[in-house]
Length: 347
Ligand SMILES: [Zn+2]
View 1 (cartoon, protein in one colour):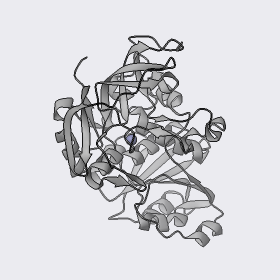
View 2 (cartoon, protein in one colour; view 1 turned 120 degrees about the vertical axis):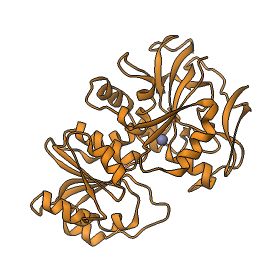
View 3 (cartoon, rainbow, N blue to C red; view 1 turned 135 degrees about the vertical axis):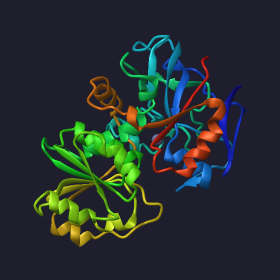
View 4 (cartoon, rainbow, N blue to C red; view 1 turned 180 degrees about the vertical axis):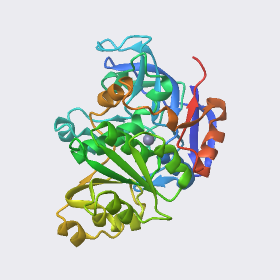
């Protein structure tokens, strides 16, 4: 049994041995975990003990944003070998399910997702994972970048759902990690310019440092006013709602151009009001995003091609021995922190 980062119950983490492993099958690989990013959902399970219907009822290993090195390969695996540097897609769908057959395995009701109760996560020295959801990293992509592929894949899913046209103007409401990932995916996906709005200037400074991204501090200028100014009153072609904040969601129709698109990425904790007539009056297309499907290859390709650089979003890297401190820092939610990563000791 390997020492893992275990959420014992709401508010209590420990580093201790736990039996969290899956048995190897011929279609699996065993991976020595190298880097794991801390996600908002990990933090939420730590502070609240639940997300919606998912409740932590027994000790659970946290973490789902991981990269590592293949150390054992199942007999049926052909595309990976021992020594390959990889990142892993944390959701394991049932390949025979109706959703998987349709290619929308992210909404397979049977999906087993790391660190979603009762499934253990990857803040542990070794994981056994289906080779089909394990992706080789090109030499130019570091372990740290590999562990950023998971959150970036959500931005990729959002950009794909938007059906961006070359030259689109996009607005991202909310400069949290997912808002930043979505802005970068939208830019890489063909947007001429991406505006990002938030109240926290330090976050805007981080994402605004990327060429092609402009920021709107909604403490001084309402997003609707700023986007109207920027587009001669027409509105954004695509609005990505990444804040999950009720006022932002209510105000969505004022941000998009007639016939434009709204993509709901942020997840409000409770149900929130939506201005349906406002959406109808501009005949806006509304899309939703839940995790991602078939995005890892594309995300890795963009990073490897140098079209997306996620490194500036890695705010701190702590050793596994300090992972409880890393989580306590993530709970602080500093405006200057985007992604905190944990590095496992060498196997
Ligand atoms: Zn995540």
